[in-house]
Amino acid sequence: MSLNRNEASTTAQVISRALPYIQKFAGKTVVVKYGGNAMVDDRLKESFARDIVLMKAVGINPVVVHGGGPQIGELLDRLSIKSKFIDGMRVTDTKTMDVVEMVLGATINKEIVNLISHAGGRAFGVTGKDGQLIKAKKLVVSHQAPEMSVPEIIDIGHVGEVASINKSVIDMLLKSDYIPVIAPIGVGSDGSSYNINADLVAGKVAEVLKAEKLMLLTNVGGLKNKAGDILTGLSINHVDQLILDGTIYGGMLPKVRCAIEAVKGGVNYAHIIDGRVDHAVMLEIFTDEGVGTLITHQNTKEAQ
Image 1: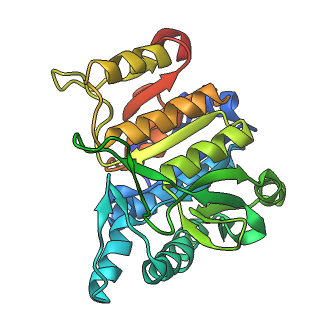
Image 2 (image 1 turned 180 degrees about the horizontal axis):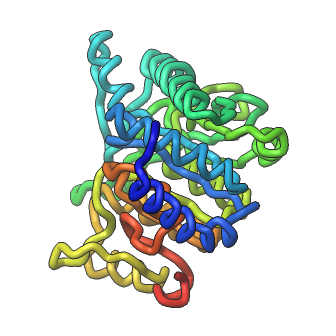
């Protein structure tokens, strides 16, 4: 691709403005949870892969954790396997778990590796079962209706939560100059497979690696106040207040709590960013603009 002088000058200025950020984050680890629209739109998939490769090229260590809920649902429909959800979580019997492993561990994981490779990077795909990377325990769900004296324990099958992360597996890949691409499937103490929420896995991976940043790609612009305005920078205390007063609710709560836990666990910055924006990852790391909400221990001015 050839550029005229004006275009070349603009490119040089953009790279120059990115220099302070490159210097600030060189050698640091950034965990990116990849999901939503960015996974199904071809243009966004390509821009995401280029962003990850660029990060690696300038000395940042990206670690990708991916989801795949819509793709799992699509294949289950094609196989005439009905899905049931309890509190937003898919009830995962043995047949469903087989599909989850096929979609996450094979189809999606390998596609992301190929996208990164095509963009000039070196990626290595793993599931949480490889090298016992993610040890899982069964997720216990309780439900209590008004007429119940005690909560009902509901079995949702092969749905798990993170018991521990084997940091040495990720360290080995990073030291070998690979970009780890992790599918959120864990293994129980009895060898059973468990489907784990990708946001939770990304948060725990970021904590264990003491990552500089955790970035959660979503299908929304970021956290919003009651007037509908995007909140660009929040402290943990401010987020807690927004949860208590009902500003943050519903499907965004698990993602926000994941970000808070990561920051409390030693991650410096957690970002909930709009994955529908072209080069969202690059904009968040290399510019002041950002495309979502930053959560940190400090207030916004101190954090940035």
